[in-house]
Image (cartoon, rainbow, N blue to C red; front, side, top):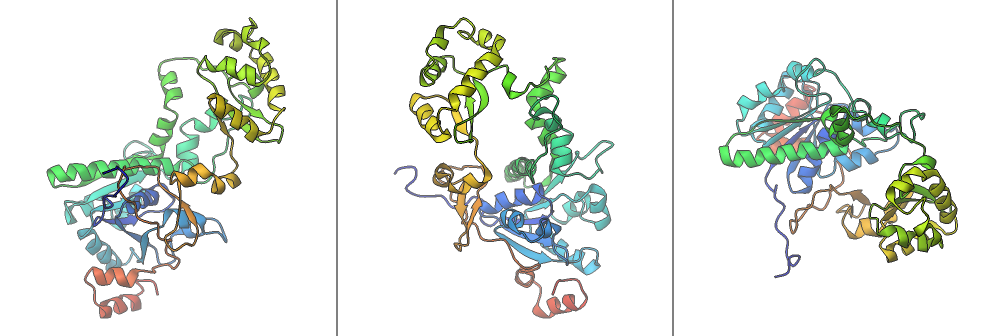
Length: 400
């Protein structure tokens, strides 16, 4: 049988996950679990998760990170609300939170409280700066902990005199979510062997430093990193960005010495191949500005897509520098399953980046539109009666 003739069932079918988190890495880790079949219960405050209204008038961040989830709105500050959560925890496999450590203790949802309720529970903790140390209680977002504190904001700026580069929304949160998902999956594997759950964790700062780890390792090794030069003086002209005739940009990444002559021929600059200023990598580095100026002129002779076709034909490593508007129409993203349709046909979403061969994923279900949309159904599943649910509503414990 060919590998793609049939698909295995999603691996986390039957797994119950409580998403008691917000903004963004914690919930996104639960989303990955849901993509592979887990039932995810999203715990929201009565007024709704603030992630819903992060961008006034827009719901797309919520739509992305809350797909496949069932919304339960509870007042966790009320004893009866906490009792509901504890009953859910007894039946759960994974509990995900990124509440500040102090808030967890005040709300009585810290690992020391929940672990005795269910010894098989995997308690997944996401923090800004780690579980220990003088800043363990400090709050943070990906822009502060992942990007700024890790050195990435300074490292990726266009040149040394530029102000630090600003990140875009959740740019560090989603890579961090993959790490937290990996920690959860590892703990579930451990549970298969030992029968016990336990604490797993990741942090924004740890993931930011991991993303910036090559440069961090240089600093640890005492290496002096030269100041970043503008693109017109990039030390390696063959690994640079270039503007094309249609004002679109292209990223050239020629690290194979054998591709240099082919590149020169495409530019109609065969003389560059044996020019002593550019004939070797060391020579090109020494005369980088001159070669970049030649390449700048050459790239302006054709539109970006024309260059891409020629580079593809001749095996020259490159990439279009896409705009956000390009992505929904990218044929490769659609063909490879990076962009996938919602199950109800309401639009498209971004799939998680993990492939499991012939394992089926769940067709993404749109995020809950109403706060507490599934409260009654989830509580009925958990053993509450309709009368008990109505009583809890009257007490102000549940939304609606």
